[in-house]
Amino acid sequence: MPLKKINYKCCSFDGDIDRVIYFFIKNDTSTGRCNDNKRSNRRSIASGIDSGIDSGIASGIDNTIDNTIDNTIDNTIDSGIYRKSDNISIIDGSKIICLIFQCVIKILSNINLEKGNITNRINILEKKIDINIIYTAYVNSSFVYYMKKTINEINKNKNTVFEYININLLCTKTGIKYLDRLAQESSIGILFESNGHGSIYANINKLDKWSENLGIKNNIFFIGLKKYIFFFNQRTGDALLNFISIELSLALLNWTLKQWHNIYIRLPSLFINLPCPSHVLSTLIPHPTHEQYLIQPQLLQHNINKIVKEVDPYCGRCFIRPSGTEHMIRIYAEAKTTDQLNQILEKVKGIVLSYVSDQAKKNG
Image 1 (cartoon, rainbow, N blue to C red):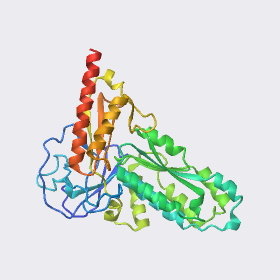
Image 2: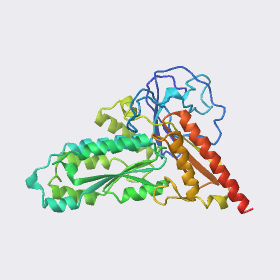
Image 3: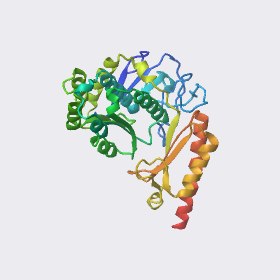
Image 4: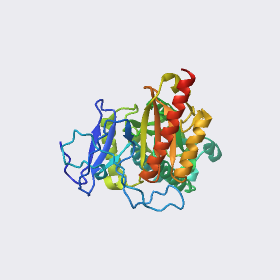
């Protein structure tokens, strides 16, 4: 069905109904040209980038972000109807994490501790529960900045329930199984991939023991927290229930879709795929924990770092990794402007192709 309503909330599920993404049409109703390279190996991670809103990515950077990135819609959409992606705002898995996290924090902030009910305060401080926010290297840096800033503000609260909670940002390898593993080791683990695949997990035994020690087991807000968390499916991949839970979360925070979308503004970001022989692919070894840079070959990683520093030393970021499913090298980049983004991608693409060619000759 053609999308004609401005600011009308929409969501999309994949064929297996295990992923959900929200989007809406913004006020600018002008149509744009359609990208002829829709089916190329050039992919967008971030779309719907607004200008004039402070991203706060680095000190000394002004509050304008380039808004010319052309992330087009698939050509199955009817001709002339919102072809230009600048009119479409996508709310991806990272912002779902933020929404859920804010709900958890709001509920917890209503718990008032009575010191007389706390058993052995020193022991409790040594046995804090953890709230782990789990993501991959493909997450936009604006998300990481937003989360760090939010966590820092929360940690300023003294003599509250947050004194007995560790909140952690954990970057892990690409693949839902790696996010799942970390989440299931957490007292509370929140994970969503950018594609909308994810959930929230909780260890009920840890939470109950913690609440008993703090004397809040029967607190209505602690009970509400458990009801909220366990409303989600404790197995990743139930997009329909996630959809209902997201609607519940928006109501709990009294947020509009636009407020949710504007909690942070993504930096322009893209990734591209380069074909690569398997024997060369195996020489690329990302960091085993988070894949944010190569540990081998070091010279290639050094040259990537050099390019990023030259083009955009403040907001620029780029990493490469071998695909786990195809004979492809993934190159991800982000920068303050699309021009800087394209420069980083093209230059890194050049040195990666040279590396692949050199390795192929050595093994030829």
